[in-house]
Image 1 (cartoon, each protein chain N blue to C red):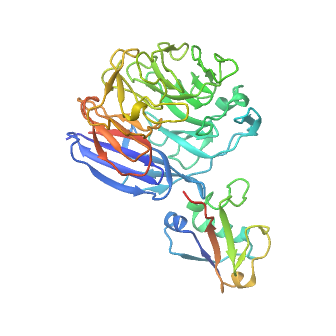
Image 2 (image 1 turned 135 degrees about the vertical axis):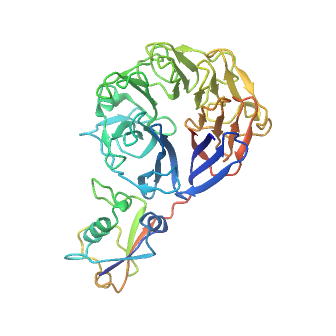
Image 3 (image 1 turned 90 degrees about the vertical axis):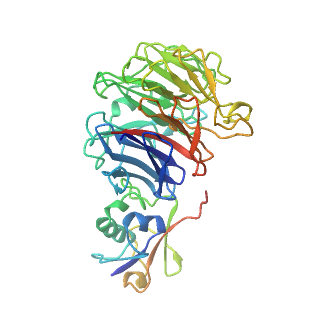
Length: 98
Length: 371
C-alpha cells in the first residue's frame, strides 16, 4: 500500500482527504504510483504530469523520506519506506506566488 | 418571470450572479474553483443549464468543468488538448521560430444547437471541438495548418485564439480571431480557413497592411445580421459589411481607439459598445475616467456613458471577454474590471451600478437571459 499526499487544490478536485492510499502493482516507482493514482482518480490526469509526454509539470515536485525525488527517473524505485507505506509520497506545488 | 445569470471568470475563481428580470437585487455564488484562473465560462444556447468553464493554473495545468444545473454543481470533463500532428513553429516576440505549445483554453463557445458540442479557443492559438460534452477534444487543424501559422506571433497576453463567432444563418460559417494573427473565416464547418483582414492597418508590422499578423482584440456579430462584424483592434475600431472581406475604420470621435471588448445591443444591430483604454502599455482608462462609449450609428459617432461609473482616479482595465449583454426588452449591459468590479446597466448603458465591487481581477463576463 502506498500513501500519497496531494496539494490542497488537487484534493479538492479529486474530492479526497489529505492522504490517499493505493495498491500499486509491481515495483513502486513514480510512474507506477502516478498510473495507479490517475486510474483511481481520472480527474487528476494532466494535473501532475503531461498527458502526452508523461513528464512532471514544471511547478510540481515530488518528496519522500525527506528527500526531493523530483529529478529522479520516473522508473527509479521509490525509497523503501515509501514503497511499504511507512512514509507518504508527497506531491507538492512549488512555491511560486501570485 | 424572466431572469439573468451573469457568469464571471476571475484570476482566482468563478462567480455566478443571478437576478430576476428587474436586475436590481443580485445573488452572488462563488468562488467556484477557488484559487484557479477561470479564463471563461459560458452556457449552451440550446440548454441554458449546461455550462462549461475553463479552469487552469500554472501549477496544475488545464481543466474543463461542466455543469448540468446552471452552475450549482460541476464535474471535471476531458482536458486532453493535443495538436494534430507535428505542430511546427510560430513566431516569438522577436520574430524567431518557437515551437507550438498548448498553454490554456481562453474561450469556450458552445454550439448554437447542441449542448454537447463546444468549440475551444486555446493558447498557443488553435481551435478545438468536442461533440461529447467535453469528454474528448479534437483540433480543427485546418486553421493552424492553413499556411500562415508559422508567421503568427503572440500579443502581450500570449498567442491566443480568443473569439469564436458562429453564423446563425449558416452552420458551415464561423469566424475566429487570434492575437496577433487576425480574423479567419471558414465556410465549410471548420475544415478549411482563410484570413479575412483586408483593410486592417497595424504600424507595428513591417508591412502594415499584410494579410496576417494583426492584433485583433475582439470581434462581435449581431445574430440578425451575420455579415456585419465589428472589431476592437489593438488601435482602431473597425467594421465589415461583407463578412470580413473588407474592413473600414469607425473609431470616429473615441478618446482612444485602443481597447479590448466590443459588444452589440441585442435589439439594435447598429448600437455598439466599447471601453476606450489608453495605450501603449498603460492599459487604463484615459484621464482616470471609466467610460463606456456607445455608437447608435454603427460606429464613427460615439457618446460617453458615465452615469454611475467612476469619473476620477480610476485605473482599471476591462479585458476582451469581460463585457456582455442580456436580451431583455430593456437591454442589460455588463462588464467586469481588473479591479474586481462587475458593473451592470439595465437601460442599454444610460446608467450603471456595480453588482459586486471586490472580486478578484475579472477576466471574463458572460450573460444568460433565462426564461
